[in-house]
Amino acid sequence: MGEIDKTDAEVRRALTVTELTRRIKASLERAFGAVEVEGEISNLTRPVSGHLYFTIKDEGAQISAVMFKGSQRMMPFEPRNGMVVRATGDVTVYEKRGNYQILVRSMEEGGQGSLQARFEALKKKLAEEGLFAAERKRPLPLLPQHVGVVTSASGAAIQDILNVVTRRFPNLHLLLAAVKVQGVGAAEEIAAAIDRLNEIGGLDVLIVGRGGGSLEDLWCFNEEVVARAVARSRIPVISAVGHEIDFTICDFVADLRAPTPSAAAELVVGCKEAFQETLAQLQRRQAAVMQRTLATARHRLERAAQSYVFREPANAVARHRQRLDAVEIRLGQLLRGALQARQQSLDWLGGRLQQRSRYAVQDGRRILQDAGGKMGYATKLACQSRRQDVKRLEMQLRALSPLAVLQRGYSVTRLADGRLVSRVDSVPVGDDLVTQLADGFVTSKVTAVEYRKGNV
Image (cartoon, rainbow, N blue to C red; front, side, top):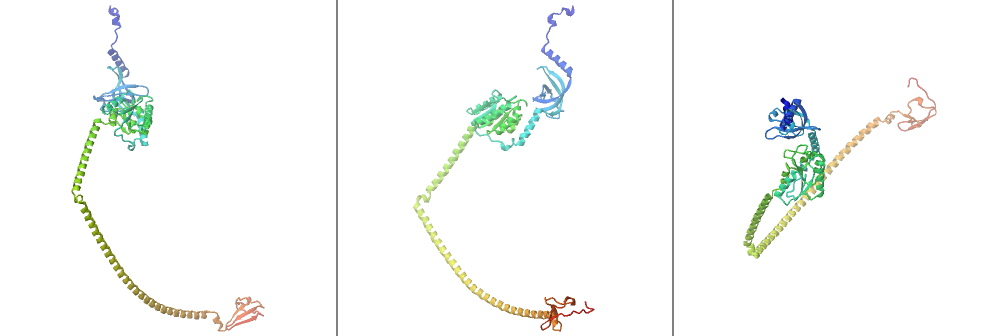
């Protein structure tokens, strides 16, 4: 009777995983279709196929994404972890894993990711303070005996370091400061471990790091507290964080960056066989140098032993004494000859000086006599000229003197107090007048004053 006759098993047949997944995929693709989503790239990988696999996330959630190689031809930038992008694509389901994802057809840059922005800001700040300066970098010791390691006790990094050290120098002393290398509080643990190893002392170098991971996984090595701890470490620090393509703030501050923890261990401890070979070469070179030095010394000794000095030393001494006596005699002769020559020169110079002195005195006396005669004659002429000038001036003075007028009958009248009388109205009746004539003075008394009309 049709469907009424179906068994319960047929009615209640379960869906296979593939069928369910395909239904979910079809439902999602019908419900959403093409979407445009903005977020920050994380866990970016590019296998040999050239496809891009990554996660797009924000503060609250994340979604897987894939972008095939053919869709990347028109992309104008190179995506990287921490970059904020705007992706356009289709919501679908990757059936093999049952994960929903976005199949990205195109992608453009959005705003800068929050982690990347923090990374760049801290990098700029510490660079301006000089924490990345090359002159701060310290060289590693050639043969360190004690090495401190700051990493996780259960991670691959410590195993890689132990493998290298065991293979090269099994007697090297390693001191592990076990810390978290991911998640909340990891940065503070790493910084405290660096400070603690410095306080313990006795260590030649520190290795700080962990294995690879996403930007979020490695973020504790980008924290300022870790950078400051590395910068103030008195022990040289090797930063070995992530893989070769990963860079952190810790790498820039450290004295040396290693691309991986294994590489850090190789930098700390060289190959034992290489050191042994170098030592052997140095020993061979030292032995060769010593042999050459001994051969040269032996040859010089043999030549000295065969020389005349060692065969007849008394004759050699006598010969040198004879040469010394000859030099002494010759030196005395030279000194006496030099003294005689100097004495003759002094005598000759003294005679010349005495003769020149006599001539100079005679010339001086003659010059003084000539000068004295000329000076007397010149003085006499000057005196005569001055006398004539005085007489001429005296005659001029007498001609101009008012006393000369008195010789012609004029007189000069003064009041008793010496004032000149020039007007009648200046002479009071009864006053005495003194009149000066050519040959004397006349005193008179004013009895009357007469004004003459027409005179001023």
